Each structure stands twice: as C-alpha cells, then as structure tokens.
Image 1 (cartoon, rainbow, N blue to C red):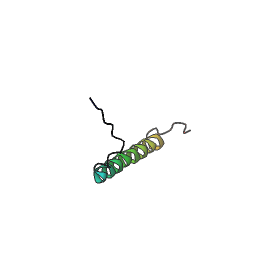
Image 2: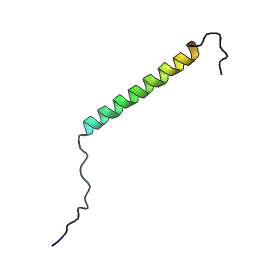
Image 3: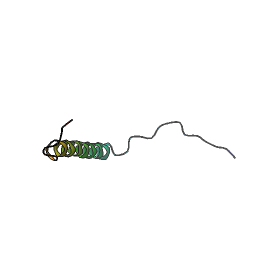
Image 4: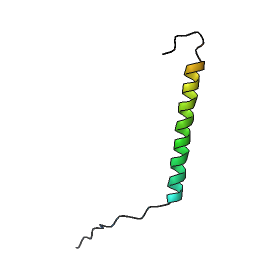
Length: 50
C-alpha cells in the first residue's frame, strides 16, 4: 500500500467572499467602538469622567 502526501497548498477559495466577510467584521467593530464610546461620554450625565 502506498501513501501519497500533498505538499502544494490549496488556492485561495473565494477571495471576494473573504474580503466581504472581513469588511463586514471591521464595520461591526467600528460600530461597536463608536456606540460604546458615545454611551460612555454621554450616557452618565453628572458623573466623573475618566
């Protein structure tokens, strides 16, 4: 019985889909950061801001 090993790497599958997924993830992170920073600066009126 012979065993063959594959040494070549597979081609990038769906680069457009990967780029779209990365862009959506980046947009979610920016929205999350913006919403929390806005909440922390405006959400506690009268409190001591750090």
